[in-house]
Amino acid sequence: MTTQKLARMANQIADFFRSYPEQQAITGIRDHIAAFWTPHMRDALLADLERGEGKLDLLVTKALQTFRTAESPIEKQIAGPEQLGQLESDAG
Image (cartoon, rainbow, N blue to C red; front, side, top):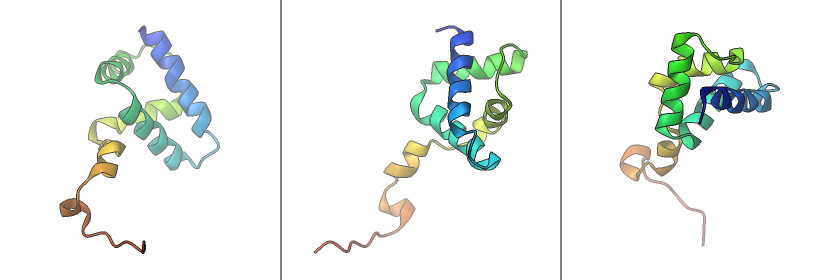
């Protein structure tokens, strides 16, 4: 996949989140890329950003700048009780 296509896809994600407050949009873009893009796709887009190539939306650029320190949103969902604490159920 070309970096042009990756940039276009990332900009489409930014278009979706544009109506959100800026920080929520940045987090949403970062979480989407972390959860659904392959490591190769993420690395290619980050390399493109570092080279200053591509036409990335400003929201995508801000999201990628926080990406290296981000946790995967998937791992947040699959964390066990030792990480989340005991969950209580109201089911019967």
